[in-house]
Image 1 (tube, rainbow, N blue to C red):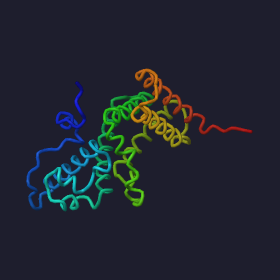
Image 2: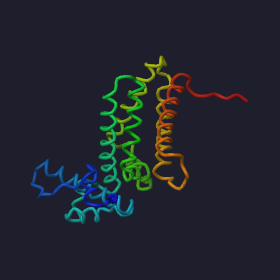
Image 3: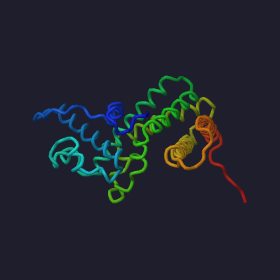
Image 4: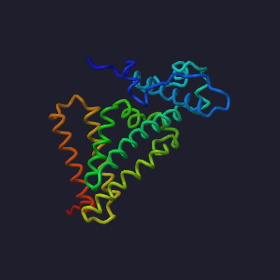
Length: 236
């Protein structure tokens, strides 16, 4: 019988969700403060996985960790900032997995395929994280600076994938003119696939493994086509 995402075994296996045993925060100890911050984030992730965005409140997080209701405010100004902390942890894990996959390859095409596999694979393995990062915009509608692009690791992630696109361009003899467009097309295609695979489960999709392999081949082909020809123009 598969383990529940909220079971103790599942929580312990997830580095973003897992909560270490907490000791008292010693005055002036940066290590203790960082450990408590991570516990607060882990508790918030657990609440989100179990009850969605509405379940994540500063009070509920404090209760989960066993601290006073004001303690989370020492680390996060509000719920939006708490979510940015969660996004940071999730995107850091995603970025690290992608970088490791990319660094293991040598050619531009191989690096791109490894990157796509790692990106898609991470969200497939962590559907709660996907929901958190890509389906929680409503909490930041009135706070523009609370958006995903304000998370520090986001820029690092963009730089990483743009470097891979440039590698492919050099390998196939394409110039740099369409690198941004090709990368955007790839990202849109990857999010479309994940929306289908993780959210739209009612549709009678083709064999999952076959569709996944075909999708990745199509993304690879689309990136190369855009790098070589740019935007498609239509007359009439």
